[in-house]
Length: 354
Image (cartoon, rainbow, N blue to C red; front, side, top):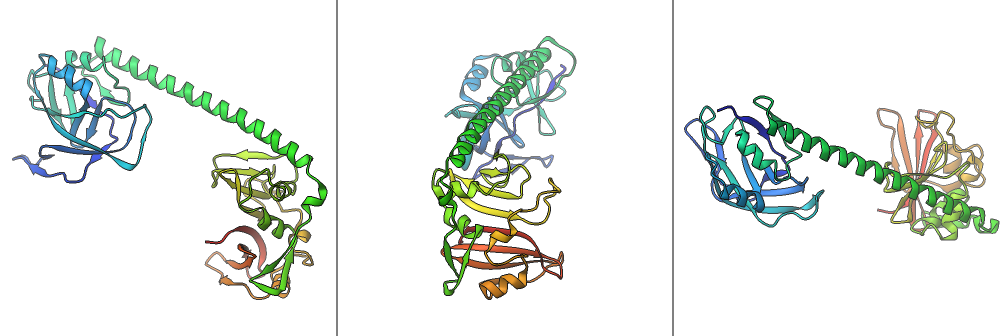
C-alpha cells in the first residue's frame, strides 16, 4: 500500500513528568500516559509531540468508530504553558494519544517513519473531515484525497490572509482617527500650557533644569489628554504619526523621527530626542537644541556638566566610542548619550526610574 506522509502541526512540546523508553532500534518514545504541553495552538486536531502524536477528542472518536488498522488510541495528559495563546478559539479539553502500530511497508492505514505519520488514502479521507490545515502533506501520488487536503489548506490560508489584511486595514483606520484626534487636541492647546516647569537635578536645590526635558519629565505617566502630554506632542515638527511596530507598544513620532514619544497603555512612557541623523531619515536632527536645557547653546557635554553638575551615573565610552551620562530630574531619569572623543550629542532619553 502506498502511504501519504503527514507532518502535523508542531505546537505541542513534551510536558513535565514525561517518561521515556527506547526500543531495540534505538528509537525513543514516551511511555503512557503521553504528556504534552501547549505553548500555543493553531487549531489542528492532529498535533505532533515529537516523536509522538495526539488527536483531539472528536477525531479520536471518529478513528475509534472506523475500521482502520495500524493504530492505537491511548491516554494523553495535556497542559498549557503560562504564555499559552490559542489562535483558533478554545483548546479542546480532551486529547488522546495516537500511536501508529502499522508497518511502513505493509497494508495498514497508519504507520510511522522518521518521525512522520504515514496514512492511507482512506485514512486521509477521514482526516479531511476534520480541521487539519497547518500540517504538511507529501502525497504518495496525486489522489482525490490529497487534492482535497491541499484545497482545504490553501482555502484556510487564503482566509487567514484576508483576516490579517482586514485587521491591518482596521488598525490603519483606527490610527488615522487617533492621529486626527490628537492633532485637534494639540492645535487647541493653550500656548501657556506648554511653558516648561523648573525641576531639580539629582535632588540638588542649586541645580535646576528647564526646557523641553522638564516638559518631557512632567508628561511621563500622564494620559495623552493631559495638558503636559499634549504640550509634549506640540514639540513635534510636522504631522503626528503612529507606529505600532516599533520598540514600544505604541509610539507617536514626527515625520522625520527626530522626536519619539513612546506610549504604553495610552500614557507617556519615555521620550527620545535624536541629535544624530536617524538611519531612516538623514535630515532628522532635533531642531530645538537650544531649548532642550535652557542656557546651553550650543548643546555640548561640557555645557551640560557646567550647568547640571556631575551625573548620577556615568557609562564610559565603549568600543564604539559611545558613552552615557545619567541625571535624575525630579522622580524621573534623563540619559544623555554621546559619541566619539569629542562627545558629540547623539540621543537624549527621558524616562521613568527603574
